[in-house]
Image 1: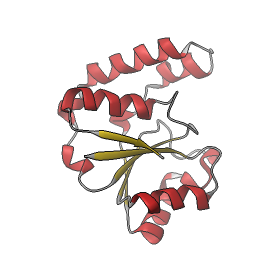
Image 2: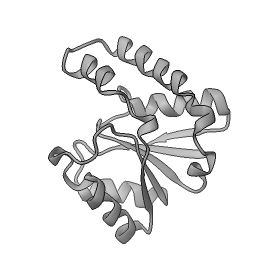
Image 3: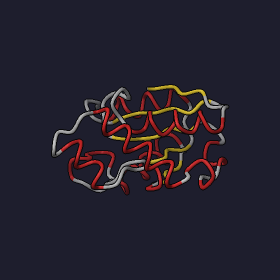
Image 4: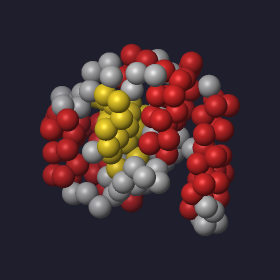
Length: 145
C-alpha cells in the first residue's frame, strides 16, 4: 500500500492542497507534537480539518503516538543536537511505544498522508515513522510529496 508524506513549511496553501489532491489523499494523519501553533498557518488543527474536508473530501486525524516527545525534539532543535542522535532516539521511542502493534492498520486504508512541518522528508520524523512501519509490516510504499 502507498502511504504519502508531506511537510507544510515553504509551501503555499495552493501547493500543499494541490499536492494532496493530485495524490488523491482521503486521510491526513498529523504526526506533529504541536498542531495548534500560530506558526502552523493554514495547517492549524481545526483549520486543516476544515480545509481537508472542503477541498478534498478528506478527513483529519491527529496521531500523537507517532510524534516525538518534547524532550527528544528539544535536544535536536533547541540544543542543536545531531540528526543521527535524533534519529536513534526517535526510533527507540517508536520501538518503546510499539507502534507497529498499537496502530490500527485501517488508518492507512485509502490514500493516506503523514503531515509534519519539515519542508522535506530527509530530516523529518515522518519518514522515520513510515520506514519503521515498513520494516515491521513489510507492505508500505513510501511516497514523499
